[in-house]
Image (tube, rainbow, N blue to C red; front, side):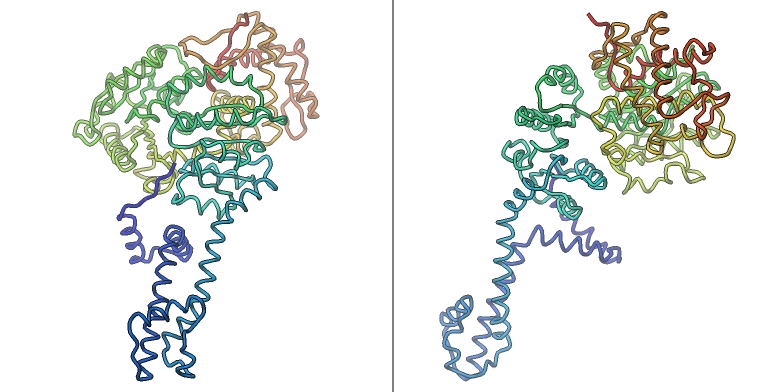
Length: 619
């Protein structure tokens, strides 16, 4: 979970912003709220000290104005009497108060007392009010455990959708708490592992729960605790999604989840922003450009930094290569890291199939060294780098390495349009130094920033519905493989060629319908699908007879779905008129039309592999 920033540098930075006039009225208000939230007790205490000092000196100056003298103990006693709204025997000594300080103290103390009592009562009854609000008004809500950057981005995304969100965070000084409350999220302060706190968040009535604390063990423990709490749940099961960093723990969970799904009331899943981020990075900046592969006859991927995200890029690059395999081409990966040799060996032990997929070379090199800045590795073995991914944890060092790479490419291969992608935690900060993801023309147009958390901490990317995930992946496959070979000659973009987020609902539903039908087709030929237990260089393959059976099933499914939408046969495809030349039964199709359905069936193992599923023969 997010830690409080107590470093003096934070305050020096704010002071500098003040001096440069960089703080807006809104940010001033945010700073005021931050100070009050963290130091309200100290501020109220200082206010009381100030008022009591006013009272003490007010009495002293009052008696001096009357020509009298009172000892220190009497002045203290009289000052304390102000707390009970008494002024001692001041009224007997004079009919007029001459001391302005005393007058101010007399009137401030009641207001300050009421303010202090009100603040205390709000703190006392806040928890009870939140509990009552949860019990009475929260149903089918989202519970988020952990309010780091990931938790905040997920909370914001769900709130933007109009969802009810409850956040559990154990650090009351977390800077994101007030921001979430400002967006009308309900934030509970406590330990999410505690079942009492989970019950307070009303998880029994929640629709979905995300565990995004810092530690894998904490996220897994929360998931298992929730599972015990909702076994009696009668409505749809609670979807509990745990963020897991460790590949080893992912493998353990993958083996146990099918068994745990037999317990009613909940559905446990895990996700990893590094895996999702690597997949998104390779989708957005693919190293497999068909034109370049045809021209160069090679693929060479450079990865700088083999941490969590760098490792995920290697693994996901192997998965995506299954869609692009070209005869005679064996992709090459060069890894640059201070401990590249050991990291490479560990990687191959966990994923031995990578040895069959790639020619992997490890270079133990400091990105600040002269050796790295010379860039000899960019054309090693005669294979020029096709794409570079800088995956260092330190954003400043990552940007420095990317700029060094850019200079090397410009010096050694000035004609190359090599994309250099820099992993950043989010899209602001240093990411803004880059020219806007290649939108700018000029010297640095091929430098791209990839905001990992901004890109991956979105509900749709960790959707619990397998059919939804497969539908989205199938559409990406359609865009990558089918439409890439077609040339769009001006005019409006065809409706089916748009990204998933912009795709019309009818096309999205068509992909979902196809994904939901995969288990039906597999059952027809005695197969089932399940989580990948160990990746292999050769995927499952259907027999020729099975391909023919399943292709006919797929076409008839598509025929019925389109007919239900009002489509009819037509000589040419016309979505506006809802006409298609493919809208015939199987026996009336020509061979090229049938081959399209066969190719869809042959692609099913690759499609499932891309979302960590594989096909087994039943029995």
